[in-house]
Image (cartoon, rainbow, N blue to C red; front, side):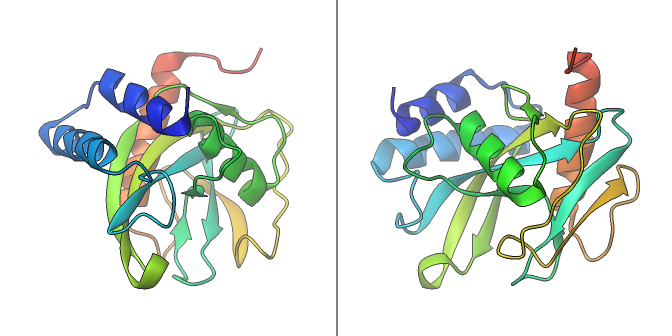
Length: 186
């Protein structure tokens, strides 16, 4: 199965939690249906991306990165790459690269979708598929200066500024998904 086919299967199976998320789910599926290259940054006017809110093992903190260009605290995530076989795999790769944490577990279903403008290709849209992830008990953040301007753990109830509603909404959805899922690490 290709990454494109995986994205279609994931989004087809996902039960959107509300009308706004259903509209995004439907539009993402339409985009996949009309663009063979929908998974790649070269696809304009937009392309699918994968991200994750990484929660601490006890669920009280979230790891966020200070984006070098946008100068905002955001979840880990970004563009899909040729080696990515699945959206979950892309989210895991990005989470690991940007946080430096080994042993992250990404829940198998998205927790929300977010469409936002970005400067890719002179102006584009990210059709972001967002996941919840859990770090192991002994997780240590290791910032890669090529990935972010800063990196830190923050209370899930009090993310740092500047951030935006999409990050706050993702953290809330991730906490709910992890709580519903039960223990992630043995």
